[in-house]
Length: 499
Image (cartoon, rainbow, N blue to C red; front, top):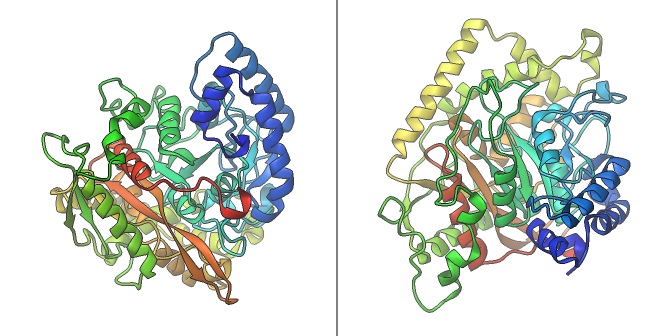
């Protein structure tokens, strides 16, 4: 087993059996970071003294019989969450010398799970866009083609996994920021249900668009991480129910033995035919949700059609569905996004140091009146109801995650901020709708295809598929579907040049 390519579950087993230990793995990962971070831009800062101490403590705890699933597993924190004593830059020049004095809830939960924080992963300025071109620090590139973006805003996290720099990585998602990088980097990106992971005690949920989580290489690791860090703190405004499985565990629900029939190619499996006493109903969507129309790359659509065939073979019912909202209805989301940018604590003297897209969003946000904000919040809640009603005949909606392969950075980061934002909408036509509804969603790295680049080079690139639940708190169903895809069509855990 190559330590740098092992999953979190594999490493946990190896630790318990004495095959390796957290100190050895941490040492190897830092060697990989030293060799490859310059190419993929995954890390903005490293925390080696902290990581070495955590790895040593984890080794002792494992020897003493501690069986926490993520104990000793390396997991960097996205640089939009603070960790006391570590740099907190958030991709912005105005925070270049900032050091955090507190540890935010999601980072604290991962620490309590026993993870080893290698450092902080790269993010765009304040996480406001779907690519990772920060004002300060490295630019995140997909290890599948370092000329192309790793996506955003958890771009550093996605790049770290695909380059073998970490087995799992923290991220958060306000409009697709976990799922976009997952699709660009050929990894798994789960956006949990609203409120599933508390951001307390220091942060606020606001309109509920942002959800913390992790990016992983396997579905089992996604379930293990969700088990480890989900939960509520006093005062949390959203209180989703516990996992809907017999053992109260998402990891137990995706145990590979439950899907052994999927490994038999000779006959139809029945693993997905017992959802409420009937087959799981999956809506196949090929229309965009946030723009009127766009031309999908043929391999993006091929990815979702392939997923539909595999899930149908596993017992699901596939139903073509139309878009549930118009591009005009989607715009009700914008005042909330803009006021979120306007509410960033930026000193007036530093406004001129912000990036153009950040200033553009903040300027628009300052023009939103209190009445307009309340109307937008109500409109988004009504839109969530409308979406659930219009898609009530299916359980999950299946689509491409992105409209095409990972883009070149200059195709997204444009001189005109308004055009920049429109380009992002075309690039990611689905993900933000699940931030509006609050239902969970996952990007699965099912498909890859050879694409000719602008320089004439042919390169294999990933095309993710997106599974979005129609009802809230349906992570168990999403993970089962994703696990079915993983078993039917396993994916490589690292990009070709990093294996």
